[in-house]
Length: 393
Image 1 (cartoon, rainbow, N blue to C red):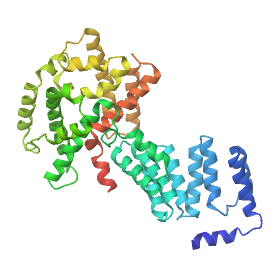
Image 2 (cartoon, rainbow, N blue to C red; image 1 turned 30 degrees about the horizontal axis):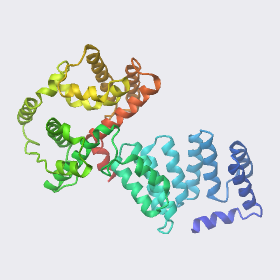
Image 3 (tube, rainbow, N blue to C red; image 1 turned 120 degrees about the vertical axis):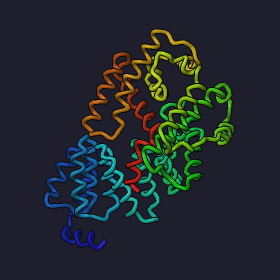
């Protein structure tokens, strides 16, 4: 507070407040170009309040110039280093530029600087954090933030709408495709069981997470073969109880690869009908089949037909070609969600789009990429975010 009072004294001019009022009036009238010109003329040596810089950033953002907005806010940060509103605006601007790490740091700093009695401001900040986490495929953290936002301010309609839109029947993050809500609920239940069994809160290595994902996926396939017809008519509570009653043997995790091979062989013996329907695909591709659902759905393959092939129906030649095309597309998307340089990621996503455009239009191709990327992050979230989560803690 002393720093702000000291700065204000330097601009203790009779017309300073009036000039700021005129500047803000232009913004309210959506005269953004005029507001920028007015501000730069009147405050060329600096402004008496942080509101000038946040106002300037609003103008640039509305004119689709986020980098100029960032410059204005960066200057404000140096002049008013402990101002929550500036960090809130910085977070929003970094988010527009897809600088997610910087955006997160700014929102967290804004939250830290906001007093407990500023519940509306804190709620807005938490809501924005939730949007950021959802965009960055950190779904559980997103829901936690939106719930915290509503707790701070029960009248925050945006946070309430986000909870309603992005949570499923289990109150968990909604999957990119509804077909996988049950699978993720099953995985969430058994991830908690696994951590409790081993008295820890996270996987110790990428290898451990990968083995855990493989074992639970095998168990899920067994359940689907036995209960596929029943699950569709079950309530969320009934499905939850069914999943909780499943016992999974994790004793092979961390042991010799020979044990893993034997486990795979045993699993393949139990899934003959499933493999019969996809006899035209290599066995190594089958675990990734769920990730082809978005693009196959957009290409016109109906859910009922997909399920029939899963249950052993023979695919037509056209359907075989469709599945192979989907896997070509998936290969590029899968590589793009790994830890690679941005330039390589962009190239792979371009290749994925070109493959998608062989059958889909421009809009559906973009939709297929977005939905498939979400599925990749959802299914392999433990693998792709393990390193990031440890660093953020």
